[in-house]
Length: 232
Ligand SMILES: O=C[C@H](O)[C@H](O)[C@H](O)COP(=O)(O)O
Image 1 (cartoon, rainbow, N blue to C red):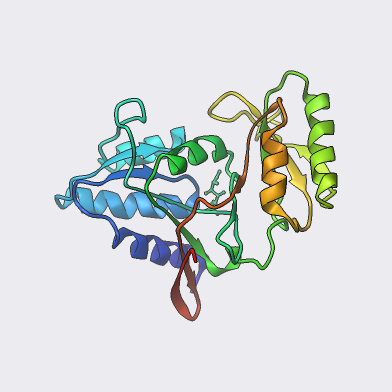
Image 2: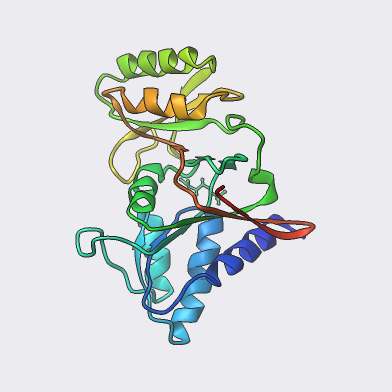
């Protein structure tokens, strides 16, 4: 079965958790897009939900699918966020931000009672870090921020190359929040919670793609079927 099919299966399983009246966080990326499309079908069939999108791309997708949208200024919290991930480890910690939406994704997930991650099995890893860790930064003082990121990574024994992400036009990729992204190619991160703390303490870092202790459930679709892993 191809990967898109697996992603859609994971999305369909997460959709089973959605009830009428729920306020939902809508993730970003190719897997989350399947969820938004399937949710749209249910909404057109009469399901009453309202969503907060985690990116402008998801906003456009959700609008196209007829899903009612709101903001975190208009409601005080969300019942459930469903989102993809670039890597998930056995503690259900994540790397996110491959699509550049990590900041809004983390704000929305943190405002939710529950986060379900949907993914194909290839995202499941023993240890985070093979996927380059996205770090969203302020353009001002970039060199100083890079040095601080380098030091933070080194302090947890996770040194590697830092690359400023480029957009399709060859210039720096700009996030929905107007920031840039530095991708840290670390190979493996032995202490992700500690690295998350160190990165959060750097003034030029807006947010990073380590989601520690946030996901409650992971739905993984593979050739053998779907498995659901709950946070211990
Ligand atoms: O910024 C993007 C998000 O964190 C995505 O959820 C993540 O990159 C996974 O995307 P995909 O489902 O396309 O692999």
